[in-house]
Amino acid sequence: MGIRRWRRRLGHTIARARLRRSGVTPGSLDASRLAGAAALIEAWRDARAPLLADATGTIAHPGVTIYREWRIRVQRATFADELGDHRRGIFYFDRATLSNWDDSGLVFTPDSLFVRALEGPAAALPPSRDYFADVLTGTSPGRDQVLVAALRDTLSTLTARFGTLEMAAWLTPRIEVRYFDDAGSDLYFGPTIVQRANRIAFDFVVELLPEATGRAILAPGNSGFVPVGVLGTRNVNDQLALYDAFAYRPWPLRAWEEPTLVEDFAFP
Image (cartoon, rainbow, N blue to C red; front, top):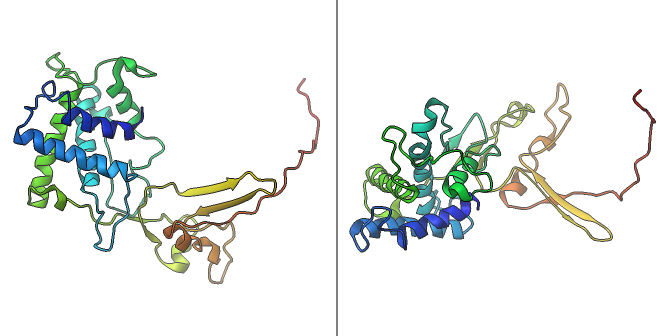
């Protein structure tokens, strides 16, 4: 079960059968707000967790704001007492200038250990301990109560940050990425800044037909040659407009050729 399914499980935990075990009184104002927050996270998840802003300059789903703040807090609540300074925190950026990566799509994600902690003994690779237990007291409030307590803290923090109890107003501004300049494109074209999207950097699609065809996109561009003494090659950033439009360039494919043995070498 991945982290996306656990976003839905959070809503189930809060809004349905586990309310009493989570320390929430069903029918209370507290329960109503927690369930409302979980529903907003689920709505964002069900919309495929978009990160693109609309014409107002904000992401239209308050669920992304709530989830990001909750994920930071629940990571700390789960692992801080066991791992101390070795704890891997959660990092989300609103404007990136030195790196394109954060925990919205990092290949070395801390979500893997968190999911194992959530699943407990039923995990494919069970954790060595109950990370939801309190190391200092030797007691465990239980997984569900830790999840809900982190969400309760999240709502208090966001209420103070936005100055309103109205969760619909808790919208994250446009998230921007400035590509780090490995190819010298900043020198020729200036900074390359795009809006963060919930997608990988290099996408390719191949249709396995008798005459195979392919499409690919690599933003902002790709070139192994930057000429000396003249304006830089246009291929350094010429895929940016296509990437912004979720479009692809043609990717020519050659017919399969049997590899040729260049040298037959046997170790002694």
